[in-house]
Length: 87
Image (cartoon, rainbow, N blue to C red; front, side, top):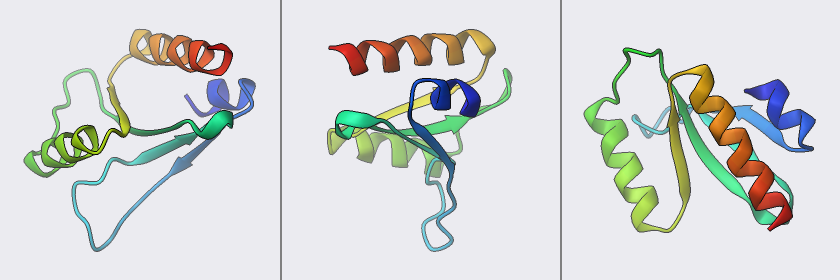
């Protein structure tokens, strides 16, 4: 995912928040003020309850967030980013 974001001119950061458990582990920053909170999971991985709460809170605040658990999911996310960049 990191390489694909870089190809689009964005940045992908690994993120930890020691005092706030459950925060998604990645932040993708694109031009035009586009920011995504990204959680990478294995195909069988599931969000913890704290991650679910984080996702609900970010959605309530109008923040973009996504869980990616496969190559197809990453491909779809990259398409979303491309569309946001040109839209």
